[in-house]
Image (cartoon, rainbow, N blue to C red):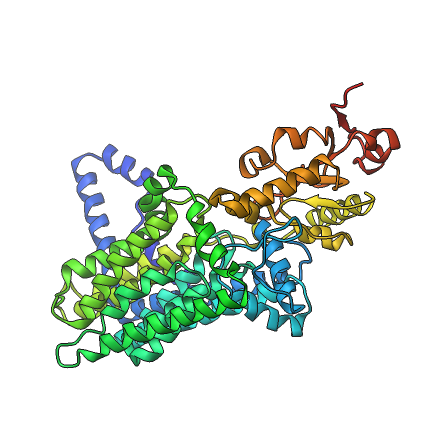
Length: 560
């Protein structure tokens, strides 16, 4: 119904090319008549736009689109929840870490061929390990935590904006646009990784800093930090915003509580893990390299591309509505903006940072947007800015911002063919006697009743950090490869770039290559195994031929 009304009003302003040609052929009088017709139609359109009915319809459109995107997220997440294979390559190692915690094994341990922890802080893994009591040890546990965290984040964003502005519409618009980014971030909202839970705790920490007691804010900031360590330095400038001339001890209380809680959590986790927590969470992160190209593309590609209209609204509100720079509220959001946009620019500049690293910035931007939208609408209705008709122009812009993100959910949901490929790859691994090192998908080995080994991404981060621990691991790996401890190695495409720690000498011990099932059909996200490396004995025994796909022959570089 809304689309029909909108189309009717747009039709009232429509001037067809044939009308212009006919008017020109009729001479000056025809041109004058055409101009008059255009003016009449414009007046009809503008009159509709100024009416209360238009505002109701456009407000309903914003609410409807917000509900549509939330429903789309829920439906897609439900369809992906019980998919038994990884949707994104690091999901596999995350589930392996969760399984260790669920079975009472330490999350942080000495690096070995069997296990190398990721560089993430522990909260997400422990929450997911608890959820496995309900779901079993499967990808459903981390995906359920991530999807639930995302929905809770959207609800908190709505309520946050509502509290700041007293406008439900502004809160719904902010939450709806955030939900619409599901496709831009490649479905990351329900992926089994730490980012969605971190988003929830990050926004909750900001909310508590803005409205609640300093002790509560400090505790939530520590939880956010122990979910993803990038929050550790960000919390400090936010807690400094507790400063008040009349109550100076509030900022002291906030900083002291944060320092004590953060130090105590670090000390306890380091002690309980024999120091390995500190090694991974702080030591391996320093090995991440800065990529200048990523830093240069940050403003346009990561911010303006998905949220162009949002930024226009925020800037318009800052320029056109009066803001008192002495108010605590203005200082809070001004300082927060400088800190967060700079901090996540730095994060984005590092190797391995993709759209998931930007999700907290999108949250902050939409928080600013919700407040900006409410300020502009209020100023327009009071007659201080343009006029009431421009409220509807603003709502049309919001509708366009949301509608631009509409996609079909099928692009993020595994197909029947993709699932069949994964099952065939699992059969390939099962058919190989002995241990198989599936470098970036260790849970595939578990599904094939094999022993899981260290995830390639975790190994790469540790090796890049250097040090004696890294050297000892590389020596252990070298010995295992040269002695053929692994019966086979499954590698993704581009392994020379993502796994340079696999040396040519080591790979030369596995000169037989067999295409992995599904290598011609891409996975839903990131990468997948494309070939299985075998020793020369696999050719002589016929193993290479037995596991090869129909119509695909093994490629051998064995010397005669």
